[in-house]
Image (cartoon, rainbow, N blue to C red; front, side, top):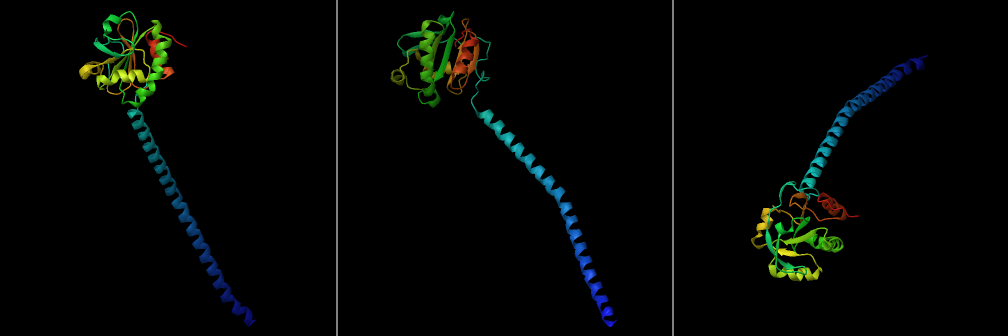
Length: 220
């Protein structure tokens, strides 16, 4: 009987210990439940901030890249192309070219420089397009050099086997008139001397077709 009485306090002590342990476990679980919403809110906030930074970076990138559509900084589409007369320094002919005298035929003005890598890549494509279409009278293609010494134009033309006229722009007056701020830049001018499209980028077959279509010429 004495043994049974001795076990009572011990059992109560164990029970209290288990109760304390259970209460501690409940308190820990409650704390975890309280932290989870905060952690979730923090995660959502970090995701939103990351998205904002990504969108800002994409906007900056698109703003800095050359435009593949009509330029907003040059001669506006739908207005008359500024007139000029420039000397020919390469391309199988010599003398002077007067833009006004070319009325009646669409004209492509390609502003380039020998120090411009995209221009050098673009040149063979322009030459192929010229020999296939423009050389037969569909349109006139003129390359206007930007800032290079005039003595360098003829050797450059021979290096790339250019047969369309490469013109020299003394003092950069024509570049200024057309507000050329990046090269290559190509203006598509219709037979009435009106600018129909402008591309401030290296031309591709797609942009060439688009530009020519804007001046009434359809190529495959």
